[in-house]
Image (cartoon, rainbow, N blue to C red):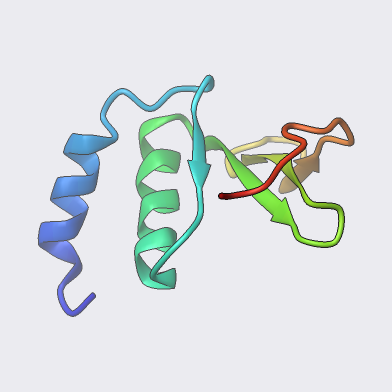
Amino acid sequence: VLSSGPLTHKLKKELSTFSDDDYLLLIGDPAIIALAGAVVSEMNRGRFKLLKWDRDEKRYYDIEIDLWSRDEWFIKKNATRFRDQGPG
């Protein structure tokens, strides 16, 4: 990402309906991943969820992030299995 302005505008448009029911699946360019997380956090009151692949256990974990929590910064990792199988 050489210039974040056009990409930020595109992500805001494409992710405009992102809600607490949605997840980010983080694959690809780390700069774009960071920007996507920042955009959805701004648009969804500091909250978003993502799926993290655990290659050892071969399953996804549901990670909830709340940047605006009044209590403290937290990342909640659910112990429940989201999916039994990985990509592909």
